[in-house]
Amino acid sequence: MDVLHNLAFGFEHALTLQNLLYCAIGCFVGTLVGLLPGMGPLATISLLLPITYSIPTGGALIMMAGIYYGAQYGDSVSAITMKIPHASSIVACIDGYQMTLKGQTGLALFTAGISSFIGGTVAIIALAWLAPVLGEVAFLFGPADYCSLMLLGFVCVSFVSTGSLLDGLAMAMVGVLLGQIGTDVTSGQQRFTGGLDFLLDGIGLVSVALGCFGIAEITKNLDQHTERTPFAGKIKLMPTWPEFKRIIPSALRGSFVGSLLGILPGGGPVIAQFGAYALDKKVSKYRDEIGHGAIEGVAGQAAADEAAARTSFIPLMSIGIPENAVMALMLAAFIIKGIQPGPNMIGEHPDLFWGLVASMWIGGLFLVILNVPLVRYLLSVFKIPYAVLFPAILFFCCVGSFSVNNNLHDIYVTGAFGLLGYVFMRVGLEPAPLMLGFILGPMLEEYFRRQLLISRGDFTSFLTRPISGTLLGLIAVFMLWQTVAFFVSARKKAAAPAPELVDA
Image (cartoon, rainbow, N blue to C red):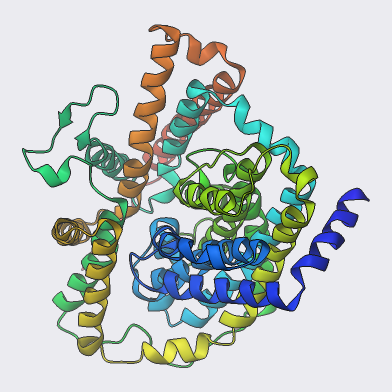
């Protein structure tokens, strides 16, 4: 009952006209930011952070939070309609864009919108009920546990890839190798830079994503020498009842995965989308359709995306530790307003804490009200002939890659990965496993080396820690099960009678 009382107290503050206005502004700006390739909440919050000096404390924090989770939904729009993802919408390119090619863009965008609302609602319930407890969960994870968690993420390769497992693993290893380019964190030595100074900080995730997905898809479409538009035909927005029944379970599963991974440092929406997709491909009744334009591939990713964006606030507000760069900027916004997030925040500033929690649900409702009715108008833009539209898409890709570091070399890197992604498409290899390896590889190396330094080279420390040992045990069971399933399938194929030859 205390939680319900606290939420009512939070809604009392969040529903003031001033805070509602700032929440709506944040959601609107965040959605616009998400629509632009390469532009994300990090750059936007960085630009708008000085404005918080002149905005009331509650309104400033609510607006900044709205920009963050509003951008998560906007990310999905460009990924679904044009196959141009942000870091948190890479998985949406798989089934979302396939639905666009089938003329189901409106349905895909509606699914992303309603699933985002479900994910946000579940995450807010977790935030309200379990924030003090879940905040301490992050303290239980050490370097060994994070290393095992990253290894478990690599197991998702078999689910993210719609092709053969061997091809998926090969692409993941390519991503791991690309992630090693730059300066070694421990020794400070240059690695695989080829003497190019602009590679000292490594290759940006935005450049790889825009190149391998966006520019590669544009190149493939131009290579087909056919006149096309990204969307054509009648707009179907509302799902049928059977389709809606497929959305709900997937969205709830994605909400659970996103809420859990959102509280872990290094997790957040980027990792949550892969986890939700892997879970759907394992337990969904329609697992065979996922990867070929299934509605579950959009619903689970969108729900996990929004859930992780909201539960990312748990470590920040409960223990005062930001788990990613966006949360670090949110911490700066708190400090600018003279507030120190941490265990005492709920007691010292209950109006701000519960008002921010309540505003997250109101913001999710704003996103549904704002975006779902606008889908028809949004899709009308994509009826422009592709010959006119693709130069504008390329322009925004270049602006997005440049805006991350204000460096022209990032545009060149994006173009190079565009050509590389086109080659991958021509030979039948998928970029999604590459992105998974590129994201997890550096994190795996960092936590692995950190644990070995702590344990003085003792590899058994990965097994003796309860969390790490449990995760490694799950990995071993899964790999054994996959191996047995492979040999059973091969044996069935070998025992099947050969087809009879029919004389001409």
